[in-house]
Image 1 (tube, rainbow, N blue to C red):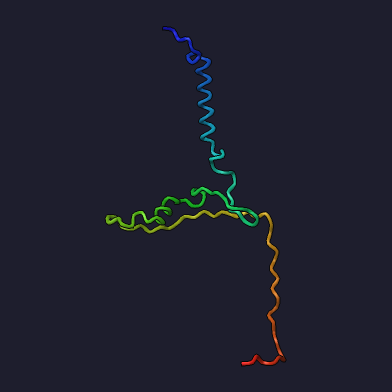
Image 2 (image 1 turned 135 degrees about the vertical axis):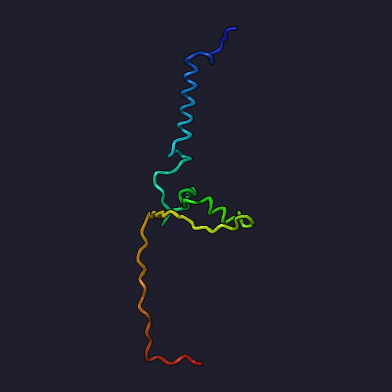
Length: 117
């Protein structure tokens, strides 16, 4: 029996394939809303907290998390691993600069009566 629906037409098939390709491009794009940002900075003066992914903070974030959770502490075959974290240097960004703090000179007192004992 011949198909009477639009789903089996060549134009509809191409449209569905184009939709699948566009969905894949949207989901795989590196700088999408769920991807990595163009520039990574820690919040400084005047900014709130930041959501930074763990792969941006260190190169061996999985090993650090396993070490902190104690994974492998009861491993009797290989023993407990020693960890050297490979942390990434991330600069902070400030909205304003803090003014310099002016400290007074130390107070020197002379010619005063002694404190009663």
